[in-house]
Image (cartoon, rainbow, N blue to C red; front, side, top):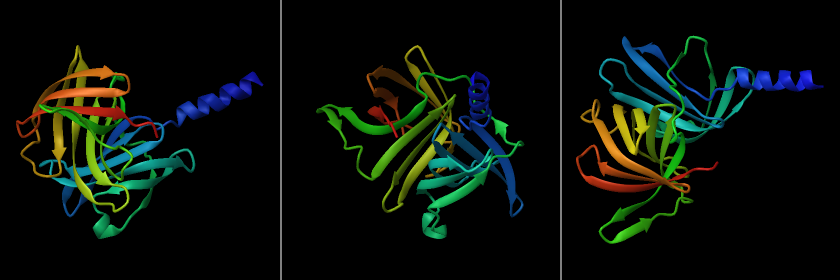
Length: 219
């Protein structure tokens, strides 16, 4: 009995997708980078041109495995939705995918924008509404996405790598959907964890002062 349990646990661990990967493809003579982020139940894919970092698309949602390397994604967002109408996709993980994950960092997880602190004080937002801004952090990689789960409107996304140490959270931007001017920027922020909230203050990519409150997404 113990051996059977061990085998099941080993199989589960061996096929876990909870990592960050990338792979390249070619479209119309251009090299495309595909960045794939997984946790235990959520998937995000982003595509951008390898040389110029020009944003192409992003899409993501909860996934279920159908066999060892194949999974189906119930999309919550799709930046190309009004072109391709996709709400579901099926993916197969390939051995050629390159693992990008670094060691886990204490900010790993999915976070929803829950409010801001301004001169007037703390202002919270209702995170149960379909209009969401989510930040997905996984093993030194991050991405934020603004979207509406009901209308599939896409409002923007950016991502890259990050570090979090001694109260300083630093983002290195590798892609940005609204323009390429932010690509290559390094943005340091002060941060602290207060219960399920992540307090985050510093300068935005536009140079504006911000104090944001993010809260852990539990689904």
